[in-house]
Amino acid sequence: GAVVSQHPSRVICKSGTSVKIECRSLDFQATTMFWYRQFPKKSLMLMATSNEGSKATYEQGVEKDKFLINHASLTLSTLTVTSAHPEDSSFYICSARDLEQGALTNYGYTFGSGTRLTVV
Amino acid sequence: AQSVTQPDIHITVSEGASLELRCNYSYGATPYLFWYVQSPGQGLQLLLKYFSGDTLVQGIKGFEAEFKRSQSSFNLRKPSVHWSDAAEYFCAVGPPGGNKLTFGTGTQLKVEL
Image 1: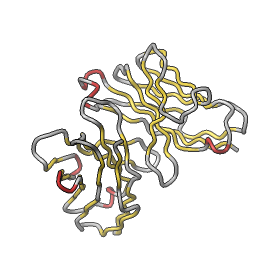
Image 2 (image 1 turned 90 degrees about the vertical axis):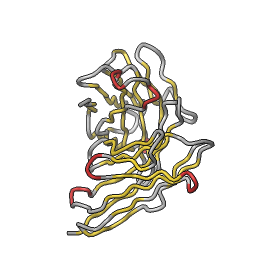
Image 3 (image 1 turned 30 degrees about the horizontal axis):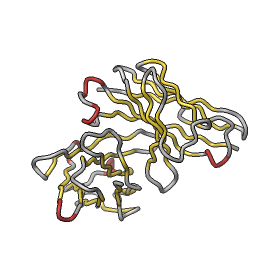
């Protein structure tokens, strides 16, 4: 079945530095990937929709300059948390749509295993 | 705007007992409905989904869910829980013709042996 690999699984960084998280579709091509943020005891909040070869679409309230998303190929999307602060500490999850799942509206998504970011 | 409510934050059941996890949604029409499971350190795995048709949906791992339009609910059930079912369960909705999922806050399931 479709597999999405997310790396790293855990990262600790110092306040003020930048961190890059990778989301790769291993055995399928993904024109669309989604980035979510999960707070403790909270649901997954969609941050942005990443489309291959074009600019990401950010949800309301998500800082574009803070959370840089690049989707340069059909198998890789990256989320860079710039100038990280402790309040950016969270669990970040990506999901990707397998083209073979049919229309985007079929919601045929595969999720990565997430990245636990801790900013100290 | 669509929203999802999972009233139970934590549920504990004994192995072999039946399980029902509640999910209520708010949406102008009938959305697409989903249940996902997340094991510690893992991504979300789709258990089942409802788009239309038969309101009782069968999923993987012996789970089923029933869509009740009158109650705006999509509760997840399993007749006999196994210890390996301990995980976090998320209900989600998505608009037909759209592509964005809205998740509930999740229910943490603990299974006592």
